[in-house]
Length: 287
Image 1 (cartoon, helix red, strand yellow):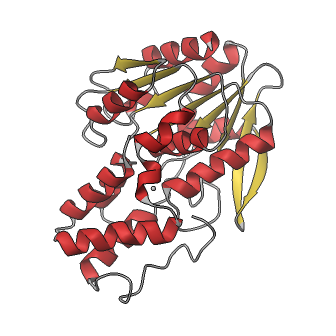
Image 2 (cartoon, rainbow, N blue to C red):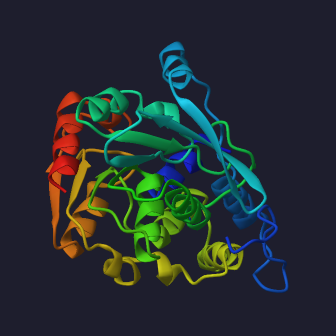
């Protein structure tokens, strides 16, 4: 995967069971090697390795497994009592990237659970998309039982919005630098890949074939009915991977959401910022 396309997918940082690595045939979409290259880049996340600090957090966690559509997803759990908070990482990330949040949540009296999404971290698979990731969040919630709150970053935020719209209920959630439109992500990837109008349409069609759902199902009008709880939405106005306008639009349709500007943190450092963590934990405690 090229670095530029990886960045664009994180900008969205989207499968009924299907051959997840296959693209539509030329009989169902215009034949173009360019759009196929973009499509393949957008469904194949690169795995990232752990540093020593992240490894220590897994050493102190209870490990588990979640079976989803023939894949084994790794899950991680800290704490033994209190309301449960689920952590959902972003594209080309992993559960260990929440290492700064875990002690703060435990200190506030929460239990903490995280999962490596399909094709990420210790989980199996080589391809995924935001809708399959949303189904993973739903399945994890069912496995856990009651979930008090969710903290989600980037593509993980979009996956959580899908889960909320499909029946997952929480008391509060925190969303960090997430997208509000999968369609815009795909269109941005098409522009970065130099696709013309026909190639762009082929790319959009490929994602709809992969997921078995129209892209409109991942747009805010279709997701809004799941936004029934209080939320904190934090984003750096100068984020170069996911535009701040995405969070502004999400906050605009979420009646109980508060939008927090987090300048100078970029797309990744927001995960480790003490002020964002403090505000996020407070929002979860108030839920």
